[in-house]
Amino acid sequence: MILRARWVIDRRLRLREGARLDVGGVRGVLDLGDSILMPGLVNAHAHLDYAALRERLSPRGGFTAWIRRMNREKSVLTMEDYGRSIRQGLEESLGFGTTALANWICHPAAMEKLDPSPLRVWWFWEQMAWRSDADPRGIWRSWPRRVADGSRAWQAALAPHAPYTCRREILLAAARWSAARSLPWSIHVAESWEEEAMFRFGRGALHQL
Image 1 (spheres, rainbow, N blue to C red):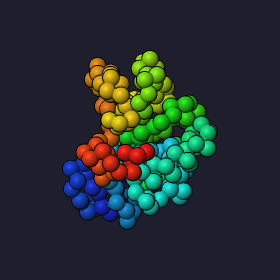
Image 2 (image 1 turned 180 degrees about the vertical axis):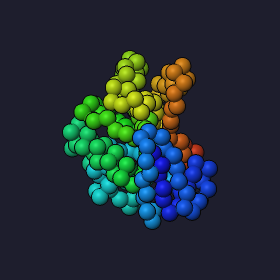
Image 3 (image 1 turned 60 degrees about the vertical axis):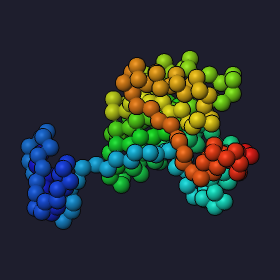
């Protein structure tokens, strides 16, 4: 199939007027008219399970106040709510031209009823394990299989949340687990001034929290 458009942005981000693109498959020419044909967008950090909360959260009061509001809102959400939010986020992403994204997820159970999506998604399972009895390592083994069941375009990854919400041994274990499987992993470091004040000076709203 030949796609033709008024403007084409190729994979090297060169803008060409009146260009065409051979995408293979069936024969024929599809004229897209006065439009721009371009590679799909990449969202490098998404939280689709919170898509439904975007009208209910605001940055007023700083990072710690935002965390408190987030925790209150999350306390009443069900797995069905999370699932609907993820579906909504996937549909909106595709509608706006995003074809690949890295998504951080707190509750893998919310994925269980998702239909396969054409988006390429890395699912970063966020780990919060600051208590001595919280040890998630035993259930990581099944994580890649649970993700791959949804779509072959989906990949599993881990995300120990932050240095102050994940014990050292869990953080290091997540890094080793990821390296052994050639998978990426992620951690939040120095996101806000309130974290800086907590770590460097032992004070501030987040330190009190």
